[in-house]
Length: 291
Ligand SMILES: [Fe+2]
Image (cartoon, rainbow, N blue to C red; front, side, top):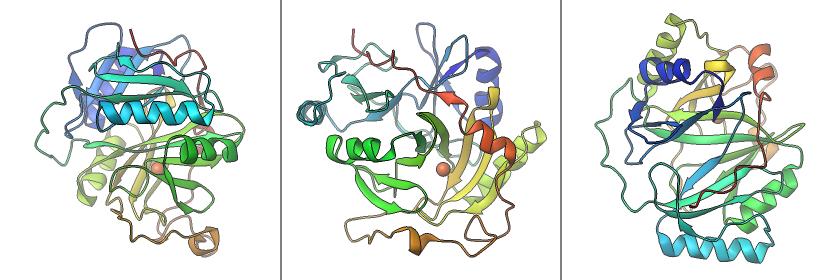
């Protein structure tokens, strides 16, 4: 993510949100969760706030090559050759642009760090990223046919499942432009989300939507406007699925009138959150990740 005040954002993610800083060379700041991943959030100073790139962890180098081959066959033209990655954490991978110009990267890490002990006040990993799409059909086709995701559920949004037991990793929302809708960070349990929401309230970050439980993915949520109004979510109890899962369509997932979640105790999302869900645009100039 590109933010204008890195020091302030770093203090927020470390002291309030529950990430661990990673020692990194270069101009960016990296943070990890307790999952065994080098980092889950990289922040860079930019003149205006924006989304820079989404990086996907890939199983191994052979899977990187397969994915690259598949994208070439799909007709992706803004596509790097797989090589040594020049981003923090290194590894082997490549970058590309999706049909709406978002920079994506696919990396198999040579070495992942060990998992840290789980704690209620520490984030585990990114649960999902939700993307606004001016052309959801084109972006959905790219994720399904180009990248091999599966459409696991469809409500107002489309929920895309990857090679992980989590219900969904990418969620596509219809929108005006290719912007970030929000990033969801996973906590270990419901108590951690409630305490995390309290910690955010204590520091002047009110809950913008939640606490509630979503239909698709069955996860508990609480949404906030983070540093520079970055749209972020605490989540937990993400539905774990296997091949036996039955996908459902919009009729199945419709809430009763007046509700915006399964429990029915949260008010609808704030006007502020609706606004900031379109604030972070993607640029087309960040697709190179190799040396
Ligand atoms: Fe979410």
